[in-house]
Image 1 (cartoon, rainbow, N blue to C red):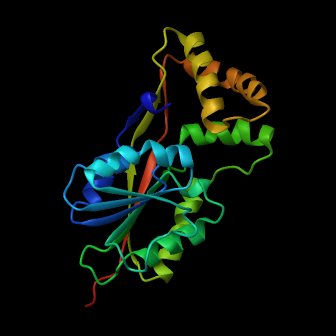
Image 2 (tube, helix red, strand yellow; image 1 turned 180 degrees about the vertical axis):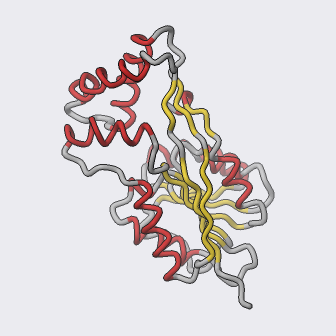
Amino acid sequence: MEARFERHDIEPVLAALSGNSRVLDVGGGSGAVVSALATRPGRVTTVEPHAAREESMRHLTARGVRVLSGRAEQLPVDDRSFDAAVATWVLHYTDDPEAAVAEMARAVDMSRPEAKVVLVQGAPDNELIGLWNRICAPLTGEAPDHQGYLLSRAAGVLARHGFTDLAFTRAHVDVVFPEDGPEARSQAAASALAAFWNTGHPRLADLREALLPELRAHFATGTDRFTDDAVLLVARPRPAR
């Protein structure tokens, strides 16, 4: 799936963190954001709960990145030990999103002039999230994703912790299926999305088949992609007057 993304959400994150020298990345995932941060001056620490993904980022230690095992809801870092914390596409995977955001706020030293928390989640009109909510959530019995709601909750938590200067920015992301023709794109998307969202699920074949009718209708329009747009939230302490 990573190869299918056309991402325009990483550059805004890097721009938001351009003045920061001690950055905490929560939920390293594919390592795309951590790798980009590691190209700049300063220190980067990433916390990842999954052993395989944590191991896949170990090579970044040669570039000065500290890789820690841990969960967003209980970060293995000291209070006020960073000047920024960032989590991209992470909150919907946490068991307690509010606890995760509170932990990020705890880790940031608010006295630093560039202190901030940066969050990226899917936009409320994200096409892929809509597809998941309509097709996959009912089949798996899981709750729908409400990405805008997650960012709204996160903003409230950050404000309670003193990060009251809030800014929201939209970032465009596409997932591209360049296969030749609508049916080939539909088949590829059904397999890729079912596995991406539900790795190891016992009903993976059912999920794939359930996705196909809507995917066929979507690709019949001539498009080769779904939008996976994001919203970037940057929260800072409000400057004293």
